[in-house]
Image 1 (cartoon, rainbow, N blue to C red):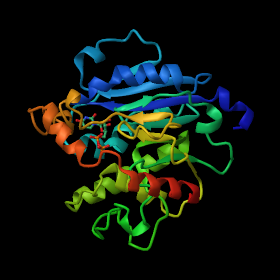
Image 2: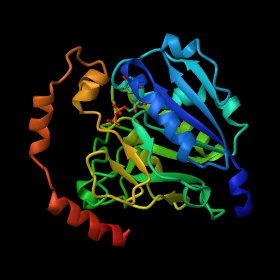
Image 3: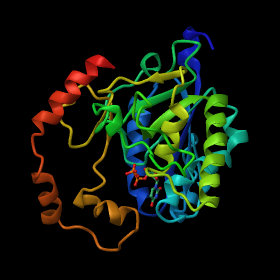
Image 4: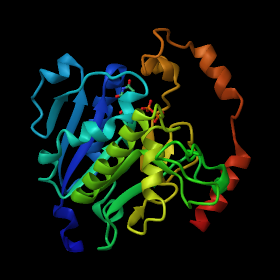
Length: 285
Ligand code: UDP
């Protein structure tokens, strides 16, 4: 695809919202319609077990696909198999992107900054907003040699988030095929990679030269208010307004209270050392 065509490229958006994660869907959809790749044709593939959504088809650019809640961590670990269930439909698009359910597009994201301008960039990955500044031996790659996601301590350069990634359609589908296979080999060996799909993704990225890496401050966590230039925000899943992360994942039926939530947050309020380390690292990437 020529660079001049990027505005015309068609985009398939993959979105998983099973169980309580449906709470995020409306925010994501509205923010993406407002701010994400405004001149491009976008279609949303929403994998959900929510009966109300599945019966609702009033949005012409959304396809709801029945997906049972698999239980944690399979809801996220099995994503590559879930995506591949739609591969024939996805092949109709130029690019495919996955967004975590708790994503909000908070500023306009243009095709020039989001899609690959270079012909040799096939995948588009984002750095993990909380840990891109770390030394490579501190990255939480999977260090278990039994897993297909294993990466040794001397390897790697970046730690990518599983929350946002995409690519040229066929390249993204190829990645899904490989990572689905790897996930299943692990399961046959009773192994689950440390950070599930994210560990597999980082293994796939290892030593690849064809990844467009979004800038360090392109994404931020909700509590990282100082990242003023960020265009994409991940809502705080631990927040009491969602009942807390374990509640969201249905690991518990008890919501956390505002007080419990405040206790966990007061530990690292300003986080100046963390901010300085990230600031310095952002120049070195
Ligand atoms: N997810 C889901 N239902 C669940 C758990 C997870 O739909 O019960 C999906 C959802 O798209 C979510 C993604 O899996 O954004 C990753 O899960 P989570 O955000 O809990 O994992 P983390 O990013 O914190 O590792």
